[in-house]
Image 1 (cartoon, one colour):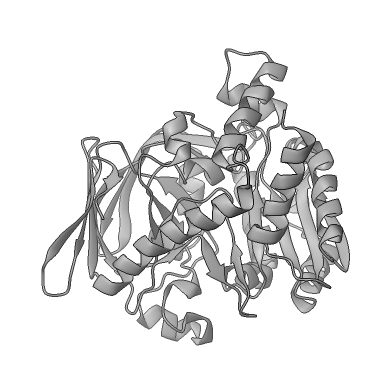
Image 2 (cartoon, helix red, strand yellow):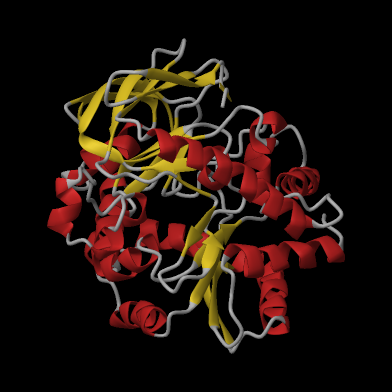
Length: 410
């Protein structure tokens, strides 16, 4: 368990570096009821730094499973008006959002996949405007995570629940730099390093990125026209910077959704909607998925890839070296927030408008003309291995090595 001071430092990172709450702003904390104690620390911290008001949006993953098992498909696809109104309030009042991502990776194991897909689709359609507000940085937001017993036991099955939670806290403290004298200063230094690499990639304006490793990945990813590589700290539409994922080790941009060819094999399991998907491979031609296989969680993968037409292409490519604190921990977290920052990753589905120059001012048609992908989904999956080689290919055919054996060479 963290000390009280470390918990307060963690909360301060979420408030001031993550969402970068401004004095007089409303804050929304979104978390499972299991995380109430830490949510309260974040709320106190937000008020300490001048929050106008803190609103809590509670979730209960156990109740979510009970609903999925007991409610009809029709009931699960009816999204109450008050939930949509709640999200509209957040947009209208330009709140900053702090989400605590923590839960049982297998909470939905054994549930009806058709009911799960129908419920997920209904909620994505109902909350499309809210999702657009976060993806376009109209709202500043951040995600942090703390251990829960079920999650910690999945990660450390050889330990009892209390020991597993303690072990998880120890890992998170290091990954979040809470074991340094000044975590905020340590994060600022880390963000500067990531931005330096992003500048290198932007200066070279690569046409393609090629990924290859011994697991069978050989994928050529075209990049969107006028793409921009982003890292760690992004800019809100209000001109205020924020850090969406904490932890974060990635430098990312948008693929061109008509210029993706080859095969990619996952490097780590994907946890989506309470289901684990593993040992899967995806084949692309001319930017579209033409074949996919999975030894674990095939139905869950199929549900992702049949959401809409756009999910059959990619919306993100992100580069992370194997010597990041998460990768070096050697821990498989079964949580995308952590695992995607231990490994280079791709994302099925929507591109972030911010990853192309002037994207927030473009229409959907203009974004599409730049090769930006559009979908209700955005699902990250990890592809980076310790032996992955990555090259950037310029418009005149010059090949620039970016990664050798899983690590940056720039």
